[in-house]
Length: 252
Length: 229
Image 1 (cartoon, rainbow over the protein chains, first blue to last red):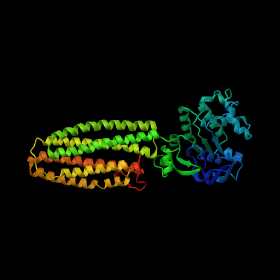
Image 2: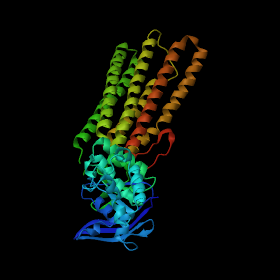
Image 3: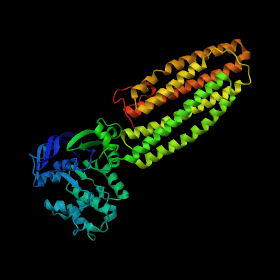
Image 4: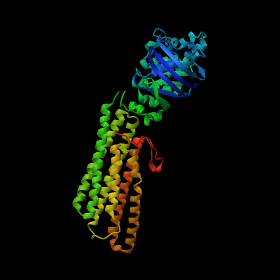
């Protein structure tokens, strides 16, 4: 099951550039939360702080608290454990190109020491089914490489790979921006199915997509969280003028 | 992404609706003038005006539909387009009401003029004033002004109710005046409907500006009271 995320006074820097400023919010469990805002507003940095990827940048620095399911990911558990609990899917699908479909999905488990063939088979099948890809690839699991799939299939393969290690949270950084409309619709349908089991945080430039898939939406601007509310409220009657000006295309 | 062309299209939509609304308001004034002076040539102007209003109604709906389909508006822009679609329908019905009055005036021509216990120009002034104020609120994006329109509806209802009662009594007492009284009754009823349409327009302005649904006397809420599209 998904877990809630509590963020308290989160600040992030790239060198001297203060890219996230005092972010505090509650992301409920088993919901999709969308983050919107103009380029460079800090939304991608924010999700990278949720699985400790920001700190992998040599000039990245983070302060504040992020609790995932009550566990402080910056003090209670290792970065490796954080990334097992919190999966991430990126803008461009990035399957391991030389690996088969099967090996792509099993890679995370193997890194964690799983070798039992039956267990791996079960997890691969379950993950591909959860990612709505199983029916399309079940006959070619070990014959085809991940790179041989279409862009939309590759993205769902990456989602299956993230799900294979049984995360609690799935972070998606513009997961459909490189896909055609049909593949985008499949990813959006998938988000609906996945939030039954996982908590989803999705960064998107596509506001209609945020409106379609997310229960809650946060608007970032210049490193600050300007407004965080139900998606319905944000897209029909936002409280902050800056949110309204952005989503109605008056700046951005 | 600043959407300059889209916002220009919203301005065009607003301007077109205001042209149509101006024509509808003028039609009511003409129809009442035709009643007052018993001039059928004015009724012809009302009929022609109604055809133009109907054509504009279709054009405005098409523009709004195109903007919804192609621009996928959000927040205040979405509320604006929804409000325009609804105001468009109300303005068209104001035009219909003018046509109804014009038809009654034509029928009245067959009967001698009579002193009737109803002040139709007065009801018309009140109803037209409500339409004018609701449209001014729409032009200025002023929810407070729109709210003031809502409170004006009662006086038109009272005048119409009083006229209804008085004209029924007249028909009972003086059967020979029944055609004149009946037509006056229908004109009064049409003007009362015009006031209702003005109320609807004012409610749509409040929805656009504040995002609050105040129809059926539900929740006049405060918030941003002035916007421009």
